[in-house]
Length: 395
Image (spheres, rainbow, N blue to C red):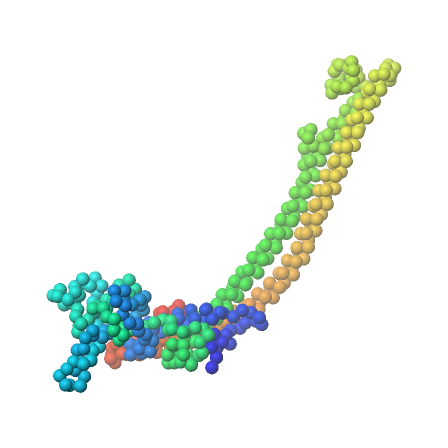
């Protein structure tokens, strides 16, 4: 017979190479299913899950929140005449009675309370996840018996129906049904996560396109800002315009030129232009003015080259970003087609998983209801009242 995990995996609609739930997953699910069973199983079947541990003097036995079946203490001295010869030659194994932990102060011998304990009338109480026996005992047969879940050695790799997992054979099929149900739920959950991740990937791709378009717009905006729109003296187009205007002013017959700084004997209020000087045959001053015009035109050429470089760089950058956006559009179209195809496949698989999980969920619940009915009939001894329904799992 195969292991629990192999048996359950055979019911899962997995693609080739797709990861199956781990043995640790199955161990946890088997433990959950077994706990549901333990919660409703008739008392006369609980012994199948029983485990025990010897008393640890002054330290108790750790049992956590598990159900306590009973506690037995072996007497320290011989209290039994086993052969009837009048001599006590054997120890006595006595069932301990439970007392509330809040009354443990009364168990001391000689206290006079009904909770008082002795070697022949020992007691036990629960405190801090442990069972304490009183009087404490070091005898090997002084033990606490309780229901241990998960059983020692039970794993998802345990062999199904082999009787070696610690799970009683009577409830083995129920534990497997619950494990298959949980495994199908996990596969369905993985499908939802896969769908979500694909949507996130599409969203990220669209965001990347938007980012690339935005960067292209920013590059073009630099042309608009640095070349055309800005009228301050720091920007290239403003510098070109200013240089040409000054050159024109110097060469033409204009008065009131106020920006001359390098021409000797030229005041802001004098008529000062190349044409005027030529008319007045002021050749010495004319050479200086011509030099200024050449300087202004040179600056205009330099700033024009800067404008050209700004525009070329910005346009190249914008074209690069727009090209990236265009390429990403092609990618996202391919991804969208793949998403639509995968989404249709997932929907079909999801429907089959839901149908299968409902089947195994119902099998498990039906088995629990049979156990509940048996437990109810055991408690009521044939009372005709309708048995209660089990609500330990959500539909």
